[in-house]
Image (cartoon, rainbow, N blue to C red):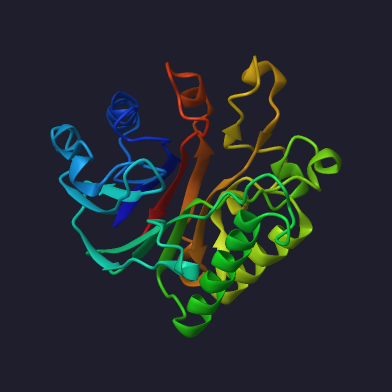
Length: 262
């Protein structure tokens, strides 16, 4: 069963309902994973998405913060939703398609501004969250699984506009990169995006602070699509829809796509 999947930190699904609808109409992914929905589940505008053919949703929500959802044209059943590091945050939802493929949708904590857990509680929470992800995948080894989401880490030197200038900035510090690598190893995950696009600068996030984000192009690849090694070979067609960052009142993240022939 071939299908296309998209992950997108939408930065408020209610505020940007029209952008989600535009993506669904113009790009038509079979599965759309959203992060930072900032909405209780019952207030996600599901009827608008159902009208476009997306009749299935699993989600975890919070008023004004966090929140993850999977919209699908294909039947999907909820498998689990973890509160890693016991933060009380809606940051994970997992579902299974009819072909047996499991999809994990994560919104990893951003980690604040100071990359020091002694000075910055949020940075410690981020590292703890990643450690809990690692431990869970060690205990429950995933098979035929896909992991997507805003992982809030750009691991490679060409995943940021300047490795030298950002190596001490949250999202690209060595300790974060090491924690993410441990998560990847714990589930035998393959970075599908970089499997398809192995070379060159590649970003999915551009700061709102940039006056002309496109011209400056000081981005980071914070949004990821991974697959377990048993199905990673079936992935193809990875891309970042950079143009969506320029839509009216956009998210600061762009959608990331991958297709799977399974």
